[in-house]
Image (cartoon, rainbow, N blue to C red; front, side):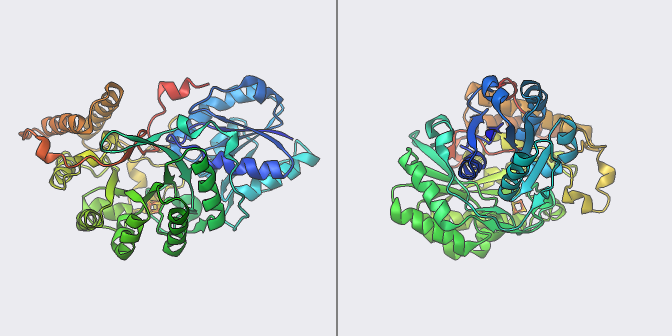
Length: 462
Ligand code: SF4
């Protein structure tokens, strides 16, 4: 069977979600080709010959791009079976099926892909029999990354001195044992996580180091959901490749709970930890069920500084509960903690996304605050009760986007956001100087975020 796997977008990562199914499906006797639209153009000739097209949608932006792409794929390959798989597939099942998708797979999707191929071998028109969400443990294979563009084409690591490193991408676990209400992992994994076997993770890393990787970015939703497994993986990584550094994502609660592990993370090459701080307003953190407070965040900053690991906080800066003064408070806290250089400006523009199945609807009164589901944006739109907050969000979003295009530094952009926010709140504005910004930290050339509008460039890729 001829299969084409398509990745619309994955924040500059070489996608595990294509490389691992490519290995599995090849072993099952299929001919697999991959197209990564973040780098490559849609290959109409390849698609026209495909019997099965699999589109990997691991994040919101990827799903938006896939929705634009599907009519074109259906036109090029009218008889092909189309499957969408990945975290965002189940929650957008209705829309995807309306756009011509035949099979929708989420959670641990690999067994579903293999079962689908068996089903299609006997009858190409057969309807889906696989569960849309599978959380059973599945066999993993070492990803086949030779099917994808070279690592040098993907996002790279920029060190504070300006030197860069080629980045490889690995997953040591999927899902999450927590239930943060706004998180897209929760409607699918419902508080469960699944580990990728250590020998598979380490073999995948080994292949990427041999392909030029000097730093590994772990894509696990939370690296310390299974601390024992995580430590075994980084010990093995460091034993074999002591020169290779890495970064991980860890929630504030876990940074505090497992602080005794941080020195070992540092010693095994951990350069920075991304953490979804989301807010410094304890009421908002409670609404999101984040499991940490503002005080915990401040404590985590100190703990990581002592451990010698940089913190890269992410935020949901605009929510229905954000006020103009609350936003100023966030900016002030970032300045007070000397974190300006640690935060990509786009993080200060992120607006709460409410996808299908969001646990936010479990919050009393939340449903009344949002409008009907909008298939164009794949979310439930909401407007702030204070229109000045929505206006400020749009202003900050435009500011961060143009600063990114024009290559402004984080401190320059933050200073402009600081000025705009104070003006919107009618507050006098202190002029920020270098002493307010903090040290530069290692960072990826493509900032971490998954819920923004696809750019013209991304949509133009096909
Ligand atoms: S936000 Fe992070 S910790 Fe919370 S459920 Fe999602 S992945 Fe887990």
